[in-house]
Image (cartoon, rainbow, N blue to C red; front, side, top):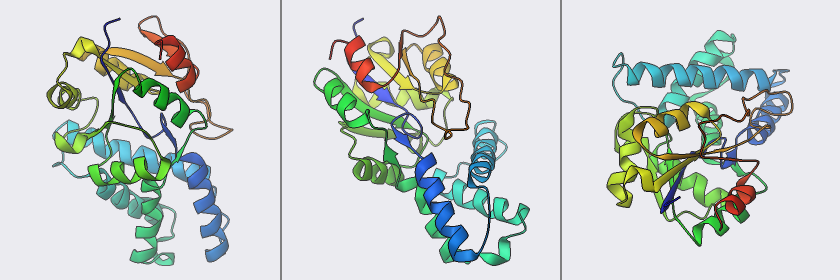
Length: 235
């Protein structure tokens, strides 16, 4: 494969949000005297967030940066749980800051470092630019470039997001491989003309989660983690 650059989904693929979310939730429960199931709440929060993204892609809402979407949907979540009066605006802002403090998976830094020796490495995330800079620095992820959907004012799986990789990295679509643990992301990248690598993250939603990690015939590469991806790509 004449691959010259790799672009990466970050939330879930490079970095774990489940453990930081659980720790934050436990702290909130102690502080507020609550007994909330933060595994279920995080799933509801992400579902609300995805619904807003889909509305923006469909043109039903104007573009809004992801950190503002998460903050808006946190308000919605707390309202639905009957907890709106229990949290100040400052407390909600602190909770929302979780998405800038994600943690790398155990294989992320090693695998990405090996891949970087051979390929140009870039994020290609739906997160905002400032959030992605914070995540990359906090998690110590070795990327050459940071690209996010904010530059296109639309969200994956819209083709304009994948076009960012072509425009900013300077390679043809077929010379770029999209790496993600989400099949919708890879399907859109493949339709755009990019190569695809699926990296399984069975713990993306925690020990009780059931993400779809099954192999598909249309993946160019299927890997258990980033170290295995580096092995598969000769890095």
